[in-house]
Image 1 (cartoon, protein in one colour):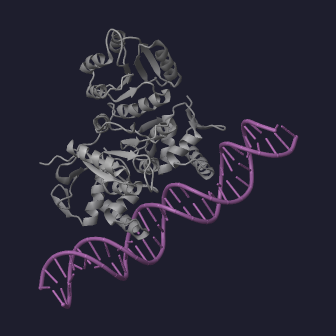
Image 2 (cartoon, rainbow over the protein chains, first blue to last red; image 1 turned 60 degrees about the horizontal axis):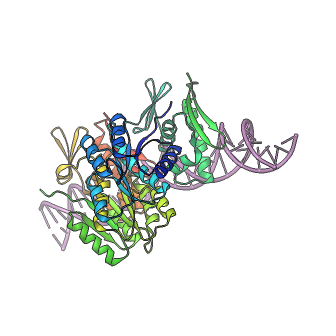
Image 3 (cartoon, each protein chain N blue to C red; image 1 turned 120 degrees about the horizontal axis):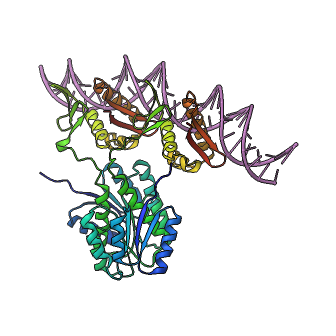
Length: 233
Length: 233
DNA sequence: AAAAAATGTTAAAAAGTGTTAATTTTTAAA
DNA sequence: TTTAAAAATTAACACTTTTTAACATTTTTT
């Protein structure tokens, strides 16, 4: 399963900064389209579906504010971050009045930009159509319902404990990627220590017990990294 | 009808800046609680329900980052803006890693702060369940009226005790989030002790008894954390 | 190949919760 | 003010979940 990447539209007329940002963001796993002026950016926006827009305010042909105004006519909701060298108060206010989610003044660190992008995406993608999260996963011949903490096979309902359910959910969410030990420990146990790690190993064992009736399901250990849930067919 | 205001928790040890911000925000229609140190802010957080937290990073007794870490254990989702005089890169990164939504470096204009608060609230309140009218909640086939302390099914009216009603209200307010034991104990019993915790367990049992005629309603225990009211469909 | 590190497995200890009933405290009626 | 009823707390015991400990096995490093 290939998870589709988050799409970013970057409108920046400074070629150096633009390509630097694009390659940084792409390296971080995003799919970034770089446009060098407002017209080009608008065309890209029309033809592609983006998750977030990074707009330079001062650009040739069409400035960032005008561009944002046009885009907002189509989409009230798409996240926008303005990037600008100007730090005049009035501009910041105007930016936010256009429904901006953030307003960064150059120079900024790329890492901070990344953090801010993620902070916004965290909120904007969780409110997507699938609003009430079902949290129901199909695992081989089993149905795993996280909200009700149950694992069902045919008509046999198995009640899961909180930790079992949490760990299984993390494994499910990771698809065929490896779930890192440290990530799981921080998310579920809130702390990555020796004993918590051993506790997690016990839970991995318990999950394997739960699934042992279905030989197609395997909780694979990646030595020194973590675990991966694979469903053979 | 009095529309309830958006509640802001402002933790700022500089008394001048603090009261300036509070009066500005209050004038803009928010209900702002000002705390002058991290401990006080944590207590306010426990006892009140806020829509957004503005945390100074450097505060006496407990710094903003530590405070945020503790709060995040209870609520992964509540919006947090850090306010700080430090502009060191590493702090910004740490702030966002704690799940911050924004990070403002002093001095900032109050208008910009307001804009940033609104930009975040716009996204975070989108998926909030609409507030119940007059403290009346629909729970599966039951109607729970907090003001009258009654639980009604069809035409059968059950009178609830104070503690039953208080606890049920907290569970309802939490939606499908887990109601933390410690939070419930501090809010209802005013003190988190062993015996109060056992008392609360007895009340959980009583609530389950009240709902046992509707198998779709479940008061789920999250081991070591608290309880969660879920309505199956 | 031996040592070290990581993981698998099982069992016991510790912590937390469910349930019932007795006791104490509070409330409201006489 | 006294007293019965209701509400809340405390106690007791059963049970569940999680952690810790111990030892076996596998994988990686030296």
